[in-house]
Length: 87
Image (cartoon, rainbow, N blue to C red; front, side, top):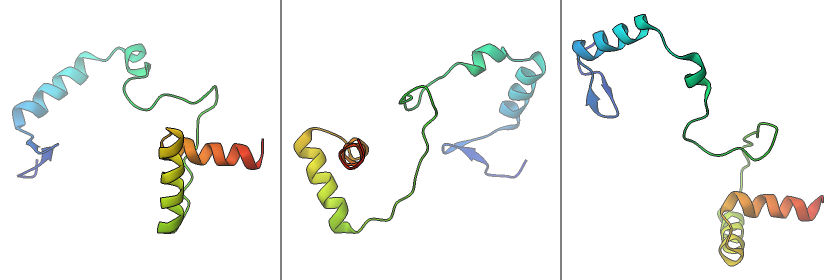
């Protein structure tokens, strides 16, 4: 292993690597691994897509102001605008 390797700023030791290898050799509960853990909740039955959009500073300010006024986050404000354009 390369000297100085870290995970989240914590040095990874040879002992830790051996512990991970031992755990892997014992096997994992696949069903437990498939269960959804932390992260953003889904928005429906279908997976959501992330779409990159370039906006000017002024456009972002307008979106953020609308979001504050309506008690929404930025993503909710953008989705609400889309719903108004194409219900």
